[in-house]
Length: 200
Image 1 (spheres, helix red, strand yellow):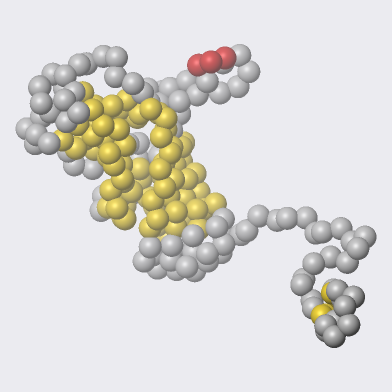
Image 2: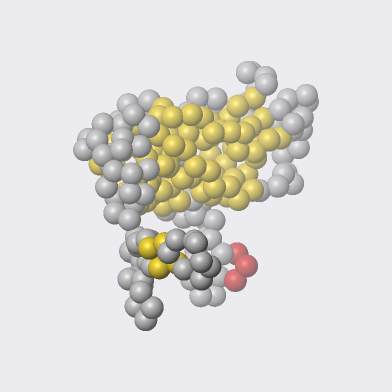
């Protein structure tokens, strides 16, 4: 490319900016591969749509170790981005002055060890004293997992738990897992949770 401002005393600039010459068509964009740092999709887990997932534990447990789980080979970067997306019903209790939160995380499929940080509160019910009428929330959260060994196989599960300011409180949090997609579903749509693992 040549730039000439037409004024005497100013240089003519020639540079290769990596673009197309006039009349050339840009090559089609292609998505990145799943190689190290390429950003490619490594795997997807999808709820089976049969019923709600629930937990009343304050310790992490898999949401659905059979369906919301992803096996993959770690990319050269040793980093993956895990995205958890679904419709959640907030936990509730009939005990006054109690605040409750749902929290999500990523667990090793075999050992149950947690990878990365805990994400939460996914929802927050301060002074949650009602058992019905609490609003459902559509949520999609990313977790960056680092320090993986390149080329090593891993399997991650979606984990969830209930957090509270009153350790003796018993409460239940839900990840909704029902509905169908396709023609004729109307406003009901789908509330099936999805877990994605991407190379980062």
